[in-house]
Length: 250
Image (cartoon, rainbow, N blue to C red):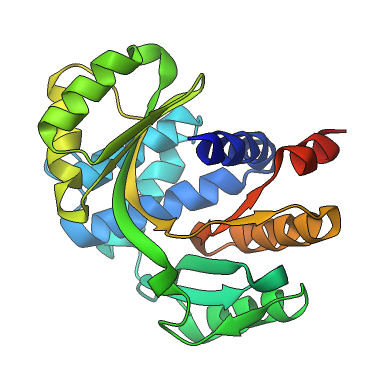
């Protein structure tokens, strides 16, 4: 839980910066387009699309952006189809990275990701060389204020969740990959609003960074990969020690 809280703080600080820079709109548009392509453009019949739209509205994404992303996903706007691909790589001190991309140009994205790694103390890796270090899970996030820990734990576990991690910011529920939709549906039926519903990759053996220089290098690489226009998600196995977090906060 301590590791989650540390990384959660980093994520939330970064999320505020992303919102200011407008990066979050691009990520929402990608997810909406992919959801529409996979299950159609009607959010009432496509749970993934409905959740993606809710996430976009939560960050004040304009309605016209949402509608355009849906049309792109369903093919109404023409152009090259968006494809999903995962790249793997190593960062400073052998830290592991998985990068989920949504792109209409696989060659361009592959070259861009390789360049980001090579210029930032890292190296792109062959498929499978990093992925085995992570476990695939479903992940549902609810704001902390929607209910207390006991309520969330009871509903989630009864619906088939593997784990619930709560802090002052959010409730994070992990499920088996094939149980994500079932748990999310039960939470909604209980009147609990979902902030995010997606698949995630959890490191099986986290790497603790206790060197300030390496921490800054790893965070810079994470930020560059995460802010790349076609990136949907970045997963890594590094965590920062309390002493490093304190130095980064100053």
